Image 1: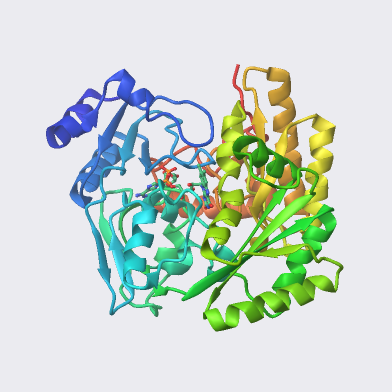
Image 2: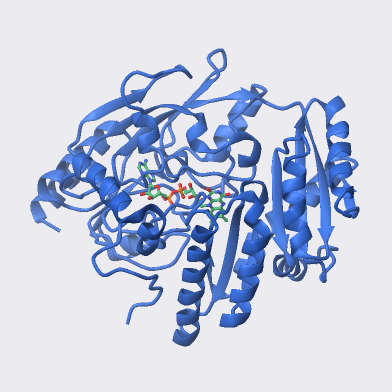
Length: 468
Ligand SMILES: Cc1cc2nc3c(=O)[nH]c(=O)nc-3n(C[C@H](O)[C@H](O)[C@H](O)COP(=O)(O)OP(=O)(O)OC[C@H]3O[C@@H](n4cnc5c(N)ncnc54)[C@H](O)[C@@H]3O)c2cc1C
């Protein structure tokens, strides 16, 4: 990296400019895979520091990679072209609640779980709840438009952001939106920046919308002998007149991983488990679960277990919570996908994944946010086995293509990053890619913000997990 640029960064960042190799190596990873080496890392603590860093990157045309907690599963924060990593994880100084306005203001490095805790202490709720919420940052959630189990009833991150402070690629500080839920002044830049994966602007503050915390929750667990009926049940429940607050599914492989990992008492031979939560007034919740049960009876499903108290409810949710740790500890690299399909196509997607698993002889576990059609086919693979890695690449490509064929999407919540960019045009068409690139070019003409993400490089037509 240019010496003058490094010198300028040192002048105002002091000790919070990291240049040693061991420090830089640890900023080369995220929750996906791949390893890259940035030239330096700046641990920013204020909008001014972000602004000064962006101005230097802009002047010397240095790639700039924003990074929250690096839990991205799509390669979002990876410094694929070296340059500067803008580390937000230390900047969590601002977390302010305005209960009478039903808003929270947060700096980008605030952990999402801390936002939940603060809101709940006022009997309020910030609904977006990625399963990584105990470690991920709000900045990362905004950049990825993160979802989570509560998406089925409450939507995703973008539905709860009413204002942002951003630093543009040429170093200007702008406010988008404001403190009101209604705001139609000019283009909706807040929504444009959310989900843009750090490629259009850097987020330095967010104003988040809160809602009243539901009074209570009840949970049911349903066990299925076949995947088709599991898929059918999802539509049946969602059209029964009840709106679940969570609806999560695990396939047989996922069930068995959890049993192996934590010894839970679950039927290993079951085809799938569906967990359904309803929330709201406690007097209504039992009635809602009755309606769900009635709807399922009509398609012959009656193996339904309803948690009788909070302890049992927590035990049921343990089943879902343990899937990720169970997959991680079962060895090798975890490749997590999040192909999302229309609800009626969930059984087809499950069937296809099963077929792909057998065709390529791979270890694929499927779980996810069933109520959104957002499945997480997750593959454990040995990255040193090039034959297996080749089969994984083919399998992932087939999963993506089939999701799109079914009218679904490459990504429901993890973003495109490096992992899915080769397939972008399959979903949004070549013209769609050009249109999006025109926005990128207008807002970041020197391509300094998270270069190498979302858009395929020339000739990049397939997923490559392993370089020679
Ligand atoms: C176990 C596990 C469970 C998960 N469950 C879910 C889930 O349920 N739902 C879900 O949606 N995701 C989930 N994820 C994925 C991940 O947690 C989310 O994508 C999360 O939003 C990333 O936040 P982060 O702070 O780790 O950001 P990072 O991974 O550090 O960065 C993510 C992206 O945000 C950009 N970025 C970060 N900060 C800023 C900023 N201030 N300004 C501009 N751009 C910025 C980065 O450049 C990058 O493109 C899960 C991940 C794991 C490991």
